[in-house]
Amino acid sequence: MHCPHVQTGQALRERFGGWRQRLVRPKAVRMASKAWMPLGHHVVIVGADLVALELAEFLAARGRLVTVLEADKTIAPELGNKRKTEHMDRLDRLGVAVRVRAPVDKVVPDGVAFTPYGGTSRRLAADSVVIAGTPQPNTELYEKLVAALPNTAVHAAGDYTGLGLIRKATEDGAHAASAI
Image 1 (cartoon, rainbow, N blue to C red):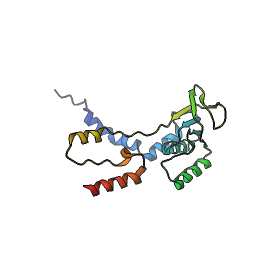
Image 2 (cartoon, rainbow, N blue to C red; image 1 turned 60 degrees about the horizontal axis):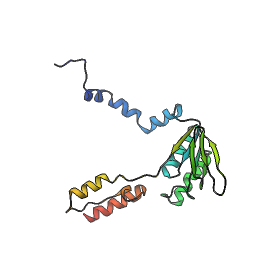
Image 3 (tube, rainbow, N blue to C red; image 1 turned 45 degrees about the vertical axis):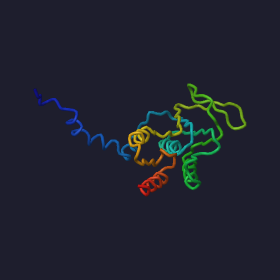
Image 4 (cartoon, rainbow, N blue to C red; image 1 turned 180 degrees about the vertical axis):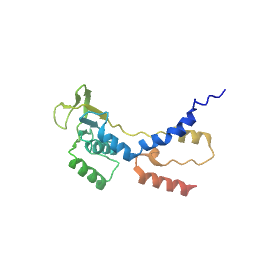
């Protein structure tokens, strides 16, 4: 029996899908995030890869006081010096503090405890702490294809073969295409 006032999931998606799509657009997210974000005023980001730096820029541009703590001696190892400098210039203009050789010992209720290079453990107050981990490739599909197609050449491209951003992904794709 069909009830005319009951809509299927597909009908609901068709009716409201466009509305949700408009909300997810980058411009709408940027506008909405200026009004509200689920993060406090003082934010510590643990890690300094590209994603962490871009997040720091995003949060600082929305009025957050941001500190980036990196255990290693360099930031964004996946970037070249020119792009690192561009990010550091923007972070500097936005007032983001970036500390390298500053491993976090633990996250505490009011922030983080970290040890600066050659120093003693310190606490850094924060309302919110974001852990920016190291990206890990998901190799499941590639491995399944290799197993399923034993006599076929299967090529990997992009971050599967190591973090390298769009340039590396494009080069890997070109090499794979050339090998076919």
